[in-house]
Image 1 (spheres, each protein chain N blue to C red):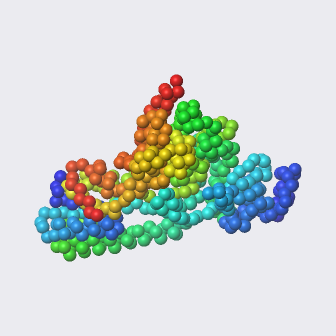
Image 2: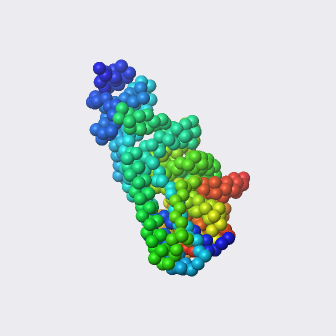
Image 3: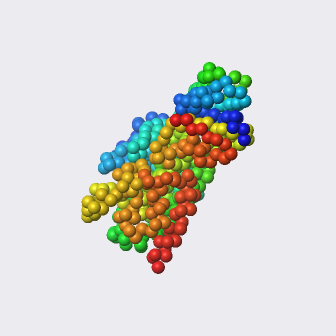
Length: 323
Length: 150
């Protein structure tokens, strides 16, 4: 007879005491029923569920019931288990709605593709007793890149001269990682500020969460490229700038009236991407890359390689300015 | 290139049917024209479907829509006076990521002098994110005339 949770904990983690001992699951189909104190038995290991993961969105905690934060009883390591949850929904990007699908199979495939490539989160997938593709992910000990940048205590000019060149260099490495996915016919699918993390121990930038996908389009990687562009705008500006932020910074009516639609993001129409207007010391080479993501853009990047080809010289210009 | 050899790129949409109607109006019963209706078939990603049954059902639906479209388009052309002997319908499995490139490759290999596409009209943001087959064709086509029907 299979061991129950109490027996498993006693055997592997005798020092551990739980507020409640739940059930052992080998079939994770009903993920809503799996919670704290339960154990998921898969791939020869036992994962004690500690809690559901959650995302904070607009200050509200959004629980992800299909993502479980776990303790591996055999090893004592932490792990995240993503259980199968097929859903499709309209993702709102600015004024556009895009049909988005959550695909466990896609994420499992990418985990295989990037095994050992630390520009990405690492993990493996295993089938549970019902055939569900469970992804077993490492826990990255680190911080969201955008938070880390936002918290740098420096005015923009100092940040731009002293911190940004190093950040840009690493960010370009992250872009190369996305180009690697594209080269293998895969897309990240959800390039947002909170999906690029800095690992505490190494300072390495690492992409997380690959389970979003979309129907094919003529430019299959356009969404990823736009995500990279929006992230670059954030990093170059050390934040997002809308009219409200500019008013708070003391820009007057004359300046605000000088802004045109062409200065704002193609998708997020209230965000300024022509950052040189706010920070005149931003080199033209970099600002021109940013303007590819503006409403004034006439030419779009069709590949990450094109984006990087324009971005690489910018790093040289910034490094020279540092000397 | 023979400009009377017309390649109409279709995708079973209303926009592409408008392109067919337009070609019918222009060509009518004039002699010497050859019309090929080309549909590049790219199956949806398997990742979008929870199981094989849902995926297969979608594929069947797409194929049946394509067949119905071809019948309707051929009838439309015939109704405009185009001889059924000068109309061919071709369904091609997509190679690579760009449908526009598949169409242009077919145009080159068949020496089509005219390419006709429908256009639904996309915003700049949509073009960035998803691309546009018609815009790509206009941009990259060589040695042929392009008719864009909106």
